[in-house]
Amino acid sequence: MSLPPDDRVYSQDHLWLQIQDDSVATIGITEFAQSELGDIVFVEQPVLGNEYQTGEICAVIESVKTASDVYMPVHARVVDLNQDLEDSPEIINDSPYERGWLCKVELFDKTVIDSLLDASQYEATLSG
Image 1: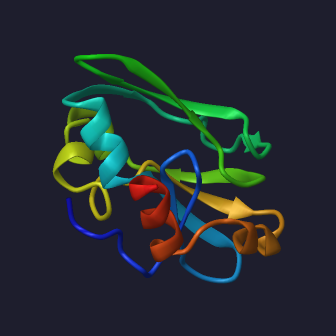
Image 2: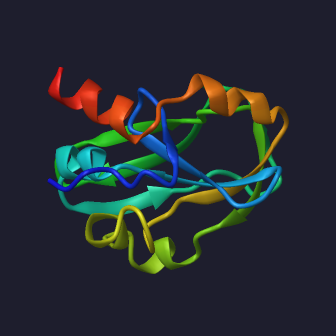
């Protein structure tokens, strides 16, 4: 497994956030998470326009092995969804850090990013 990209931050729940500008972030699952899930067959995406609290279930990812809840890593409003996942959820397996993103959110408090992990801290949780 390759190192997680260092241009984003990570949650303990194996999600990544990439900040686009002052208040918008793209969210996806990590390579580790997709490898643990196995072949992804369906994604129940967050609701566009909905506001989610930190830790609230916002999506479900189903694989041939299991279904896994996705917990919103920040307090945010969903402003965009990855429409490609509707017909091709396996994109997450093929490209978890690029084409396999889940949603884009508007952050309510950008300082919450400081409580998330950088790439090296996240990687340490995987080997620890």
